[in-house]
Structures are given as structure tokens and as C-alpha cells.
Image (cartoon, rainbow, N blue to C red):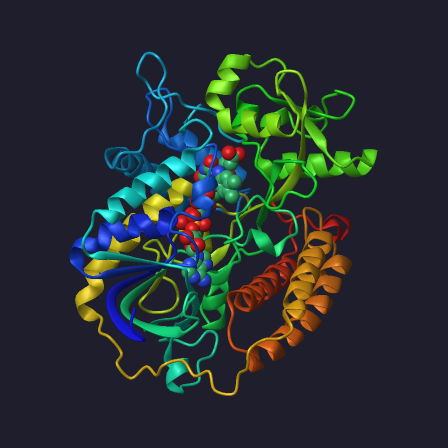
Length: 522
Ligand code: FAD
Ligand code: SIN
């Protein structure tokens, strides 16, 4: 890539959101996808359970809509829920036409699984590696399109706005515009300028803001932080989803996920003594929505002083289990657990960011020419808690909508040729990497200890006080050193942590994933 280039569509991120959008705009202009690791590295690649969609007559849009609204605990935007559920089936059929292979039963019908919070079997899956199947299929389509260029190991540092032209940009100001992005070429270490008529943020989640997460290491909240720094709007950031059943395997980071579909298949949550406990918390027991199950496990662990709870799969048919969950079975076996005879130790782990960059029904952010789709966006679908397997669906539906809106508006958008190249004057090579690693550890400890599944006013205040110190130190380092991926990611994680804590501090209600002890007491 040359130091400055122009593309019609700039896409930051190569998970389901970025790739689907790329395929849909590529017939209308030049497309550059930049992605900070290998092209397939993404949360998408690790999705296990599958994708929820209404495809059979025994199910209905109304049932899926109701399940989504119940999980979201009164905080979903019903209009958006209706859009995603009703348009979702068509988008899933498109994914199948592109070549995605979802499992079928011997009679030829799709083998639909069930997960927590769903009233029906409606999860399409490919064994327990659904995300890998989707990511591989999309990448095959991407490689076949002549208008799309994939730039791997390119790290987006900031979106370009009037701020970079010397104009003061303030939060809440009307008319902020995006002209593209500054990106760090991780091979040459140079910062390049990509000018774009339309930019899509598809950078995924922020699991690494916590010490324990199911997310791969790319999930550092870069998109949310970039948009927040550019004074764009973000929403719902206090709603961080902890998956109840990550494999408890001390020292493994990120955590391996034990899909919720295992509980849909008959796995039952128990304590170390083999006693069930979920009936004490919810009549849906092991299949209650995630916020309830995660809090129940957290509570049982604290009450009993134990490091994990367990998933008992003894009663599942062994061959059928291995057939549906080959990857999970193999992983458990690799650490000495045969799921047919031993219970799987599980703990909650940070899994999904329900909030993000605030967008409208076409994926438009509050900044002109800038869209956001996928986990980095807050559409209103998930409310206070995401229903299992709704996020892949949301990414497909919003990629389609954002692509249509982008193409329809392309002719009115021009390149801004007055954008200057990145100015690295006065910075020197970092010789204190320890400052970055220590601040990252501290940040993750603060967030895990004070802003986890159960919060309190005192914990949140303590977190904010600590964050201010880490923020000050990191900004000082950022100002004087040559940019590196690690430093930028730390800075982004601090930004995201700050937004989460601030949102949690001002939310007086316990809804879904936000649970503050002082809200109950006051
Ligand atoms: P991602 O797939 O995470 O892609 C983000 C992309 O952005 C990556 O390519 C990344 O490298 C790139 N990127 C990030 N920052 C930068 C930067 N600064 N510069 C350049 N590139 C950048 N959801 C379901 O619906 N069903 C499931 O079964 C399911 N299972 C899951 C299992 C696991 C273990 C995990 C972690 C998540 C699961 N989810 C599931 C959630 C779902 O996978 C994600 O929400 C979804 O895949 C997000 O897609 P995305 O395209 O928005 O982001
Ligand atoms: C899982 O398989 O449990 C993950 C599903 C999801 O996050 O939607």
C-alpha cells in the first residue's frame, strides 16, 4: 500500500460483519479491508453454538421476537428486534447460498439446536465450529471478487475527521464527518492514510478489558474507542455479557468456551458434590438466560468458596454428543476430562459487548460517512442482555442494510484531499514495554474485581479512581513514543473501560447484565 490511497469503501475488520458488508458493496466500487491479524482471526471464527433464525413452520417470528425481548429485560428497541428477526431468515438463506454448510438430520431437515432463553429449537450450526465454517465461506467469496483487496496485519489507529484538519470537534456537535482512517502497517511500522468515501467499523468486541474472557486477543474494543475519541456516540456499554460456562482450566488465556448448546443438549449445571442448584434461581433451570445463569454460578462459587461449578453431561448419548460437539469433546479430553464420565468444570467469563457505537436502523453512526456493524455496534437489538446466537444474525442483517445505504448514498460522497499524513514528530522508540504490560494487567484486574458480574457503587468508584491513574500514565507514554499495536490497544481498552464504568455509575436500575448491589438496597 502506498503512504496515501483512496478507496470507495474502507472496511475495518474481517469478521462476519466486515466480510458480509464487503461482498454487498463490492460491485459498486473499490473496497479495502484492513485487519490487524491474519484474515480469519476474529470472534466470528470461534463462534460455536450457531446462528438463530426462524426457518420451520413450528417456529414463528413472534416467538423469536418475544424471546429476544425477554432476554433484553425491557431495554431492547422493539422495532430493531422485529427488523432483525424478520429479515434474518433471508440473510441466513443467502449465507447458505454462498456455501455455508449447516448440519442436517438424516431426514434432510436442518438439525436445529436450542440454547438458553430460546423457546424453540432454532439454532443452525456446523458441529460446534459454526463460526469457522461461516468465516471460511465468506473469505472464499471475498477472494473471488476482483474489487476487494484484503490488507492483513494493518492496524487502524484512528478515524480521520475535521479534527485532523485543525478544526475543533466536540462531543454532541452536529456535522462531524469521517474521511477514512490512519492505519499502522505492522510490517513496515509506518502509518499510512486511507481516504475513503465510506468507512465501516467492524472491529468486534472488547473481551480483553477483563482478565478472563472467551474472546481471542484481537478483541480490544478498538472501534468503540476510535469512534469515542472522534466524539461519536456510544450506547449501552454497561451491559457486558459474561458467558456462564467457559472451561475452567487455570493458566489458559483466553478461555475455551463450552457452548450453551451443550445445556440445550441435556448438560446440567451442578456443584462439586453433584447437586443441581439452578432451580434455586430460575424455573428454566440450566436453560435460563445467560445473565441469570452467570450470576447463579458466581453466587454458588462465592457461597461454597469454590473455583468453579460443573456441567454434567453423563445423561447425554455419548456418540450423539461427540457428533454434535467434536471440538468440545476433544478439548475436554486433552485436559483429562471424558465428558461421558466426568463433569466439566466451568466458570463465567467475559464474552460479549451488548453496547457499542450507537447506530440507526441502517448502521449509520452519529458521524457522517461512518457506519458500524457487528459486535462493535449498538443497534438496540440486545437491550440489557443478548439472547444466545443472535449476534451473528444481527451482523448479517445490519451488514446488508448498511451496504444498501452506503451504495445508495455513494454518489453524494467525495474524497477529502486536504487530509494531512500522520505526524509522528517528536516521538521516540518505546524502551519501557513493561509500562504497557503492567498497566494492561492492572486494568484487567480492576475491571474483573470491581466491574464484573456483581457491582456496587464503592467498587465502581474505586475502578474509576484507578482508571484515571492508568489513563494518565498511558496518555503520557502515547504522546512521547512511536506508535505500536500494544500501546494503541492498551489505550483503546482504557477508553472502553472508562465508558463501561461511567455508564454503570449512572444507571440506577438493575436490568439484565447490569447488577449493582446498591440499586437493590436504595
Ligand atoms: P469479529 O468477528 O470479532 O471481527 C472483528 C475484526 O476486526 C477482526 O478481523 C479483527 O482482527 C479486526 N480488528 C479489530 N480491531 C482492529 C483494528 N484496530 N484494526 C484493524 N482490524 C481490527 N455469536 C452467535 O451469534 N452465535 C454463537 O454461537 C457465538 N459463539 C461465540 C463463541 C465465542 C468463543 C465467542 C468469542 C463469541 C461467540 N459469539 C457467538 C459472538 C460472535 O461470534 C461475535 O459477536 C461476532 O462474530 C462478531 O462479529 P464481528 O464481525 O462484529 O467481529
Ligand atoms: C455459545 O455457543 O454458547 C455461544 C453462543 C453465543 O454467544 O451466542
